[in-house]
Image 1 (cartoon, one colour):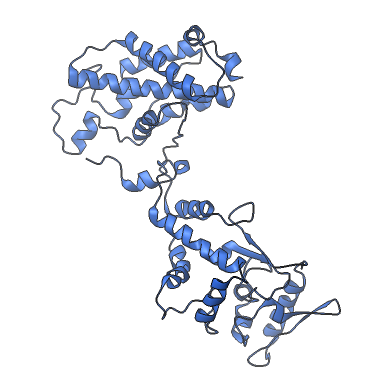
Image 2 (tube, one colour):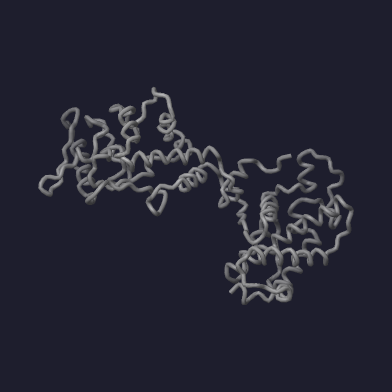
Length: 382
């Protein structure tokens, strides 16, 4: 039985998921690199071949592509439509600082202002005779003075068109020019260099919704502990109430630990008297204020209220995650093996397991068992 939707498993970790990701998004991100290479390798042989085959004066696409020609480049050219499904415009992720300008499209590339000139001045773009004209052909340097050399399909006939030309001239002439080859920038990364990770993250954040569980993964405890806590945060643990809601006949729904209330996640890990004893014991052992929560979501986020540094909060969070693991395992021992509940033994198990896992996985200074039992950790975390 699948208790968690696959979409939630693919959701990025900062949105509350596992962060497995989508193979389709990864493929789109890697294909987008060919757009970057086409822009930044103007003198490469493969780029010249693509240009000679797919160049089309009637095409206004950011990169040339004849859809009538089958092959890999056709799929690469259709990336803009795939990105558009997620509300992203791939062409807007590229910015160029024109220097020579012979490989920079005057109208289609983003080089002056925050968008392409064809989007800023659509009326003038319609009047342009050559839609794929380069910056070098339209902006001439004559004796140190920049001169705009336009070519319209007809003469300008209205005051609005003349005003647009004036505004266009101000934008173009006000853009700084540098010496040397054209320099392309990738705006999704602070370094300005294309990375598959940046575009993949953008795709995933545009596709997936925040699960709202505010779960934070903790590398100080094993991954299985994180997975259990994550499932509990989404109320996807197979408690008796959860199984009954899925038409699984489990008999009585009473909690196996306290035998007082129906066993759902909030009761088992928060409201049960055994769980309350565990949290009170942890509060006393760790010398922190009493752990109060109404839901599992509140419980797993309680560590953020600890008034210490990040290392200390991460340590408390690790211990609380281990406590969730021990409560769940003890519940299973009672349910399937008929064992009796031993609260003191559960607390000791939490101490032993957290000492073993945190000691092996954290960057804290070496901690002795005596220090751990007394929770003399101030000098280790500060």
